[in-house]
Image (cartoon, rainbow, N blue to C red; front, side):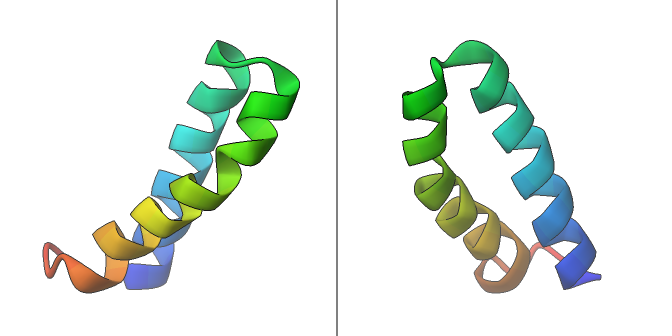
Length: 47
């Protein structure tokens, strides 16, 4: 379940960043998006 939540949040927020930000900003935003998705899925204890 946690892996599914991680990839879903990573994909959704990543797609939003791709649409909302220029290419290089979206590429640089991938690292914080990954960290936030990891925290939501594994550390927040929501799932």
